[in-house]
Image (cartoon, rainbow, N blue to C red; front, side, top):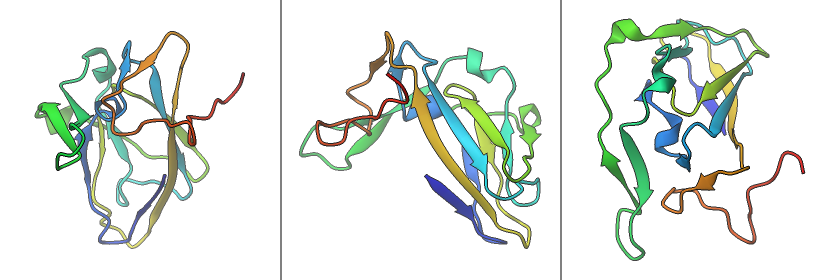
Length: 151
């Protein structure tokens, strides 16, 4: 996924855990790879993390709703309210990569600078002895299976 935070108007991304949207059993099998295509700074919306939060599990899940219903997804559980003082910024230079554990709480602030913030991100999953939830919004199909990184 290509993320472009526009100068001065790129919005915040509220605190969340990727495993909310990409749920596996057991948990902890999904990792985000976040690659800075430009410097990610405090001013243009770098990532912020709560250290150690990957040990606390998840508090909500986004799931598919039954066929024929609207909206197509819904949430089970609620996102916690997090103390802003717990978050630590993670500025990254252009070309740097951040590995994001699926359960770690993270966010990014609005871009208040005159500089853009381009990022490319994707997720990988350890598929050995892992069950991808059939309730996840994203599902592999016969025509579009999840590609293997190696065999």
